[in-house]
Length: 298
Length: 205
Ligand code: SF4
Ligand code: SF4
Image 1 (cartoon, rainbow over the protein chains, first blue to last red):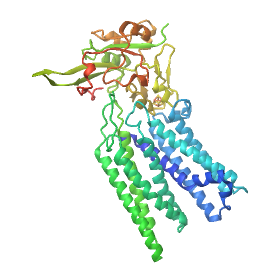
Image 2 (cartoon, helix red, strand yellow):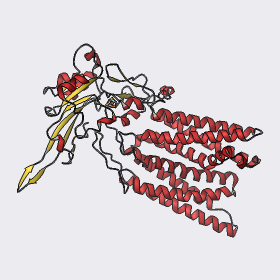
Image 3 (cartoon, each protein chain N blue to C red):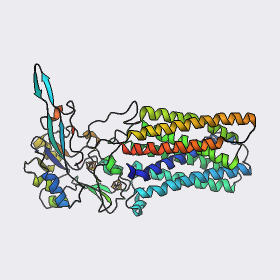
Image 4 (cartoon, rainbow over the protein chains, first blue to last red):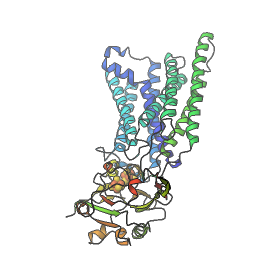
């Protein structure tokens, strides 16, 4: 289980990148493409800088995920063949969509920086990047939903990946916005959004975690040795998530009080600690996920 | 001409001596901990009351299992680099010069036939002793079995000779991969699931 650490890091960081993108850009870019009138005026300098920073964060997360994934290959120099089986391998497709997502995000950074006269091209690129990101998430889920792996071939896999992406994405976006451009209204929205996302994550984990949840899947006959995932991982994950949820709630209340009292901000501190707790819960949950499917032999 | 090589396994005849497992290790020079053919010991049951009498309901049999050179090799379909391929005669091979060692196929194969080989840093599995078979001989496991519980040949021929069964407890649903496998079940196999039988030697296989 512990030797799967590169996959734990790859999936969490990759999903967080998709989540940051989906909360910060995708709905707005798609709206602007479908309804050009909603695009609004070109951004001012500060907003443009913030956009570049958020896009750069997405790119950096994707690059880090790609880098760490090499540690899980025993012949990393042969990785150039990895797109050979797009016809039937979800693993090939996952890498294709990750690379496509990275390429469109990089193009988005360039176009935001150069500020071409019309924003139509930029919005189209940003919308396409979002679609690539969604397909990255879909292929990441599909590749684990193997008929030979009943513990993974389950609604829990896509649900947990999507919730990880959105919860970590909303929190990371809120924090970056607060660090770079404090006082923006979007911070409050993202803070409010984080609460139901982390809450939903707790409910999914409690009910659906294979082998541990209240509605655990039953394993059929198999030639795979039974999983030996420590119960502590499940309990630890739930505890960390609950602590994170409480802190997000506290941040929401603190923000409301601060607005009224017009004092300084302790809100982002609370959110930062909540983010670390939720991230730690994801690490525990992901080790548990990989532990569900044993590899006989070495 | 053979279009799909297959194994036959007679669970009713297997004594669980593991000569097939050892012959495979020996022929392929497999390091400790690496098994291409494995013998699973299925055990369960106990006593049950029939009327006023307690009778034994013990389940005990063995399954010798390697790669089944499936007609639908999900291992190869899932491999991102196409390192797993199927020859015209149905034998499924791992190309160790192409495999990146991602170990994804290990999860995809329901027979856990793919095993990591620390010497080549790739996955590895039964290659049907293709050199021996190409030369007209049997695979090492088939040759070694003192009970004649293993046989090999063209899948269609084996089915004519031994029947159509390709799944007994606890083998996975054969529709997942269409394994090139014919089995003669042990008499305990039909009631193994209801008697809560389990593989008793996980540490070994
Ligand atoms: S038994 Fe497993 S490794 Fe062998 S061909 Fe079938 S799916 Fe592939
Ligand atoms: S371990 Fe090798 S053979 Fe298996 S999926 Fe990865 S590249 Fe393909």
